[in-house]
Amino acid sequence: MATLIKWQGGMAFEGQTESGHSVLMDAAPEVGGENKGARPMEMVLLGLGGCTSIDVIMMLNKSQSGLVKDCQVEISAERAESVPKVFTKIHVHFKVYGQGLNQKKVERAVNLSAEKYCSVSKMLESSVEMSHDFEIIEG
Image (cartoon, rainbow, N blue to C red; front, top):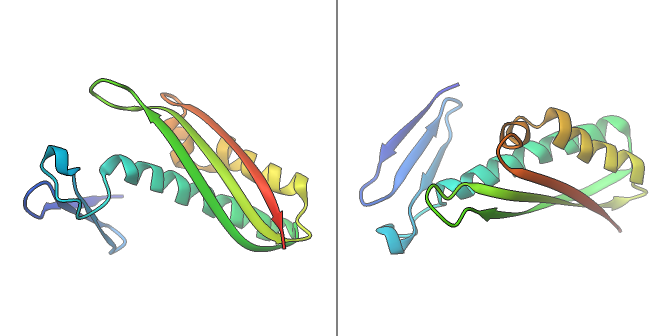
């Protein structure tokens, strides 16, 4: 896997992925950015959310756990006070919307993603206090 990061002027950079996608990143205005794109640390959380969401949806579809209509993941994180301002805590909260969803199967999917399958989660857990939970919203 490889990426290319190209400076776009100021504090903005365009990231190009090996799979042909681009994303714009920028720094906060207080450090010279122009708020043109996501912050790099936000990208880490987006990567975590995307990775674990794909796992959970794949498992729920495979296990026939009911009709999933939507899946949202809210991620909250705390960072160190001093440089480097690494993440110290990350909490992943799934909201699974659907009909007739099996509580145990949803719980299993969320746990398996966090504890075994999500590469981003597994990478972060060695240096960050990770936690996760879920709720099922019927309808």
